[in-house]
Image (cartoon, rainbow, N blue to C red):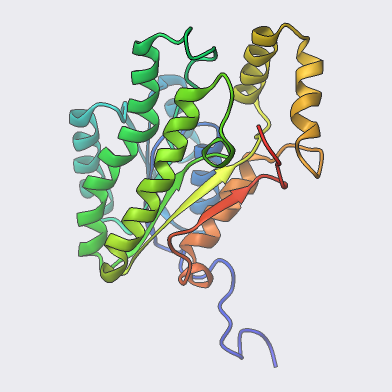
Length: 267
């Protein structure tokens, strides 16, 4: 007897026609999530701050919604969700993905304005998106939210205190919302990517190397040596996890902080 006949849902079941909002969805992890969900038949509306990346996304997915939004700006977030309501006719799921690296430096070297900017984008932006998404998801009868945290939200991150503090805050936001929204049939989880290969991580490694006075290659090896599998994760690894959490096989998972990190031991 097949798994299907035994009542086991395929891993992509429930994704067809799913209405999903994705912040920072035009590049990196967000773009991989958008591409993956669209490939499974979901209806997607993204936002981003880059005109270049938005144009590339719209060229690849002309039927998907795409808006220019700074998630730290309440008015822009409100406008985005008004556009989502018009384009999708409702909402079933949210990916709170937008974030910035923030400054690298000792606590006595960090500009308070850079601290505030990092918290505003990485943490307050998730609050602003969730406060607009939740009533729409409730109206749909329930759904799912994925908040993008980081391994830095589990281990701490020397010389990256604004970023790490925001990512720890996202865990608190996730756990609180999971308890608050469970009775409304809304699941809320956090994904904690580890060291994700790509230009953003390369910039982080270079900044850390400069901070401690070593070469890029030395610092990259230091990062890789902290991963038991000795290699970085990919954007697609994270996207696959989001797709699972939104699917029927993931419908019992809520209030969890899920590491997608190849067993990173520290940062």
